[in-house]
Image (cartoon, rainbow, N blue to C red; front, side):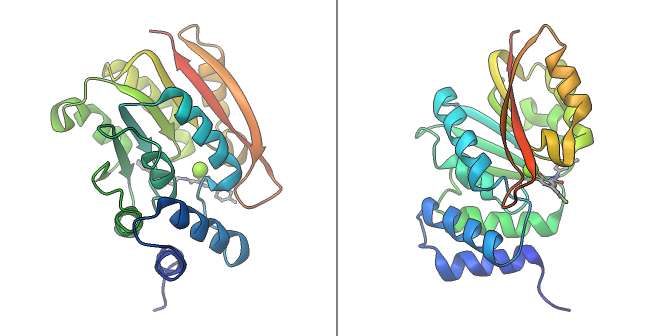
Length: 214
Ligand SMILES: Cc1cc(-c2n[nH]c(CCNC(=O)c3cc(-c4ccc(F)cc4)cc(O)c3O)n2)ccn1
Ligand SMILES: [Mg+2]
């Protein structure tokens, strides 16, 4: 049995990036996925939009749904203030193993808590298990058909507060049409679409930013 795509991505980071340097980890992954083999990281184009929204929000507590190999965990954690934290949820143990190593290689393990499991099971445990009152920022990048149920779950668990920013990847490709419908027609959200392209391709995609109004 050969290596997996995530394992080859980790090898590329260990070969081409500098330990403790998040920027070099991001570039190593982007270069590998653009020139060697595609992978479902948010990527460098949408990554710039993610960076700008994060800089604007400057979250103390951030949640990521869908870690994959940790590319966006590194993008997010590198921009957090000293005492701020990121909790990231990954469903697939094979992805989680790689993500932990990539996050550690970037030197960001103290800012990131990776939790393995399904979003629907873990979101209701956030308060009791991680002492979270509410999230300032949520990056939705997991199964596209979970965007709506998990947003409703975050609301019902009291994990959103006035001003919480939700940023959703892939609203065009693979697409999250029900989610766009939900946040754009809901008076409790102020939404805006940021056009871009599917990671490492010319295919149209984009991010939807939605501010929870309380
Ligand atoms: C239920 C639950 C689930 C999770 C969870 N953890 N990891 C993920 C990964 C989800 N991501 C994607 O499927 C994804 C796909 C594409 C894509 C693929 C093929 C194409 F042809 C074009 C585009 C592009 C992307 O940018 C994506 O993000 N989900 C975590 C917790 N709980
Ligand atoms: Mg994505």
